[in-house]
Length: 450
Ligand code: PEP
Ligand code: CO
Image (cartoon, rainbow, N blue to C red; front, side, top):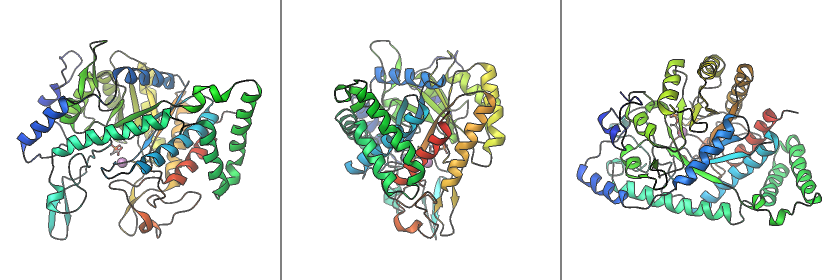
């Protein structure tokens, strides 16, 4: 049982039950990989994680909005172009949301480390062949053959190296001019001009331009203002493979506190959030901002237990509760949780994951989600918060910058007969670039208070 009174260490999770761990066939090879990881430099720094906690603290009070978005499962084969295009879509969404919310948007990618996947079954069967399930590139390969599906600890090192190079690219893009507000606005303009829903979004796009001209006219020199050219961008992933997370956990020399330096923010998945489980034990002791998914089976007592265990000091921004109820269930399930957390006085960020409760199988057997269900869940999320008097703090989206055909609907409607055209995900269906920007404009309509 993890209680805040039992001592924590980066390995104290090892005495508890850790769900969703692969069966590593060669424990010695695993130890060699972990030893190597322990000697590698941190990917992120404690000070950056602290800055993110502070920014998420503003989200708790409604003074900022969280956009957490990126891939369901990143690939070791992802190109620099696909990273750039994913970032571009997130920046486009953030500008639209910033304008409509009238507060800063905290940008957190599911990126540079989102390589591990929980699975509903440990094995997968095709005809007469049964093999271990694909658990993300940090564990095994996606191809359905015995060699590829064998868990390989060298992949932990590849995950580290891949995260480092993605992070390097993100740091260069976000500080080196790619995130320039004028440029992002030009991409949104292009989207509006090309989109079938263009007219609907024309007004917001024009207003953003007017606001930029107004700032110039008032004498704000936008050319020399760093805030116009650079953005803070943070990384996150599901902390699933605990030996990897442990090996990248370091003591901060400034404060003596422990940080999981594999990403700025880590979250616990719906399948591993048991209060007496290893994942909660591990994350309770690191000082990074953390999240936990909250699905429809979670009771108010479960959620309060998580709040007390993961944020006993009531630090605003420390804990994000990412609800993923499904478009149908959110109306019934969310209100009681909002009330319980509010009554108990826990400062949390409430974020809406409108993806994972809305997955279904299309007639061709592919997993998909409908744009309208995603939007309906987000609407339900805003309505529940409005009624409870709590703050709808953000959204958590699975997307890619590529023009894939994995989710149905959107302004450029994708039909179930289109899915086979470009279905590339290794795990869950993602919104494509256009559907993502489309969603940001639709959410911006919900955010506007005027
Ligand atoms: C995910 O975020 O990709 C995921 C598996 O979510 P959940 O834990 O909510 O099912
Ligand atoms: Co997913």
